[in-house]
Length: 427
Ligand SMILES: [Zn+2]
Image (cartoon, rainbow, N blue to C red; front, side, top):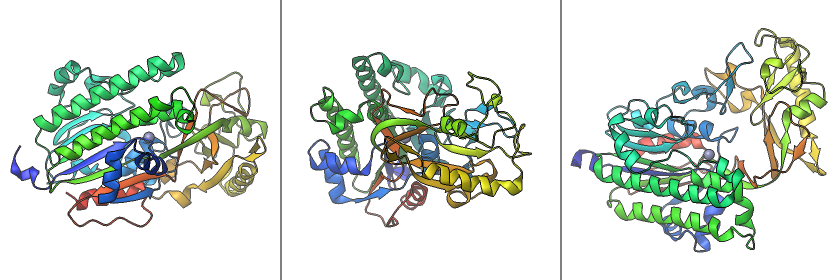
């Protein structure tokens, strides 16, 4: 290791989907003793995630410092402009320069940041996080591939296993974590780096399936849930132990999590209230949107007005848009399931986004109240149902922890767009 990069090193540990409130809880209860120590030594804040609170959107803002109107990623999928055809944005669609590509900042090792597939050139090494289809394209430089294969590296947990059997899923979760740990150790020692960024995504997967097990002490997987977070905490402890006294550390999540009771299907509601009309049923294709449609939703709850000139069968005139935005806002504010209000917030795009890609933004984005998960799904059978998942993302409960001897400044109420500046300060 050369002293050149060793004298101003920054380590970033990402815990996908881990809420501030849970870190507080698990560090106080003894499950995360290393996090407890870090909270005592550093600055620990609750952090706002992006809207929507989806991993590729949130991590896109964390690594570029830009809001979705600037970086152009609004979800796991989007429409090809001028069509109803879906595409899946990837790293090449993310606008803005990730902090590891900032000029004259030395080498980086970046492991498993969601939304960084396919891996592109970096001064150092990069292993993409989900969604990454092919390991060969997820690694830069490709000379690293044989070693990753030897370590049995896995990009992501096979969530399908969670639908088959919880035992299989947990086994896969642990194997994925072990391979991630072996890989970080290998790169930590082998590479010369000034920035080391490692993201754990099993935390999010586990929380989707077993949030109920976290909250319920009598749940058969309660201890399994805690054990996983204890394992993560031990890796954090190991990394802290490996750090040099002048190194800086950031630990953070991209969004929070909470219990989910019911999934509510937005397009079902739009169909029932006459805003959405489909040319044929059943269908899963947005190409079946007809000209009577005034609005439709993309996952998870991004509402697009079917505007003339913007979409092939657009029918809403620009002058009528405002009235429809108001109607939809009222409609969703009053939506109730099981006697409870479903929607916490209805956001207009101008309120939450700014930048050159504002035109591609959804016209409205919905955030759900506690217990409700929103999904678009074009043609579900009913308005709401409970599913195998017991946890869902939250927008207002991500966390940020910074420990450094150097000067840094964290806003009182940070958002994930603020991380970029902090990283730049510490390098
Ligand atoms: Zn996430």
